[in-house]
Image (cartoon, rainbow, N blue to C red; front, side, top):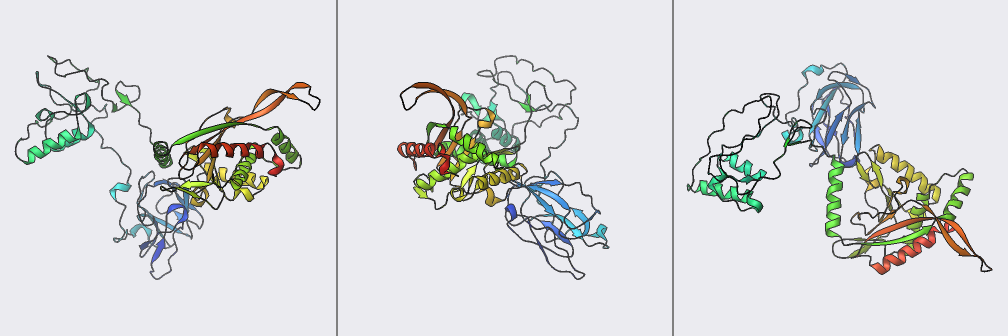
Length: 474
């Protein structure tokens, strides 16, 4: 990502960028420095830093923040200048890559008379935030309903059908409802439009009267006779004020949550998930961790789990695979994706070549990447890819859970909390005694197309052996 470039005294072409996590696209401006989005189209949110037109900025000052699907990227000024124009306002959504978002001129130039270049122009209307048109009165919006004629059959309309009928001034009573429970569907409305184009029906809906603005919603009056074949249950909800009957509150979803929802749905609907669970004894790991802490080496139990999974994948490359649509593909690298919860949703930064890293190096990588993930500063190469995922909810007191596979990976390991368990053991002389052990329960979700149950079982047996012998990991 690049900030605007400073122009010399003679005009020259400016090439500046905003792309996915630092990929450069080009936009060409003349006469004034500007910053813009790269080529292509993608959803973007713009967050300003409260800059004002005519304000002087210095090199390195933050101009705005752009929220992509997975991160929030800060756009900094690369030189001193005057902020001449703010083309895209704060909070704008769906900004097209390649569109102009602002202009910067040199100090001393007349910034008030700088015009937006015609060849670039302001962003398309799709990039501006969607703002509903205000109603004539600031009252609760009440949908305009057609008059109910006694004895005339009424229909429950789908949203798409309602829009089509209103656009072509048609009435649902002129057609037949074929949807479930008597719903008038989009296809039914399109049939009416086709009949109208053939001249077989005419516009019969009266023009709607100007909507009234009652201060108190009027209760619905019962029709004179049974006009519906069955009651409309539940009633249609409409946006409105909180705690008002028949209304709801819409919660805006961030781009990353939309991506997560899409990928989770695709994973659960297209991948045959199988689950395998095993208990691991953490006694040796906890002792090894205490020894490292005494040497001022701070590591967590999760760092040992990451290392154990990476070593096991190295030993069993048949699990280190991905599904490419036709069959399993064995990967030449062991990169572990670690699930990190953020305010924007779950993201999985990747520990590259984890099998070759030491415990302390893994711990340092996890801490740095987790902080960048929570700050929304991860680069694409830091969260894309990975051959195996680990999700640990032990710090939240969860005993056991299962995770959804992160495609195209074939497996994800779910780790619960370690808990004390009394076990009966025998010494060398055969004397039995109760001893306390610290156990954790790990569950692996695997893609049955690439990793069958027998292979998954052998993987967890090897993982358990490696984790319970931390000398193999340090």
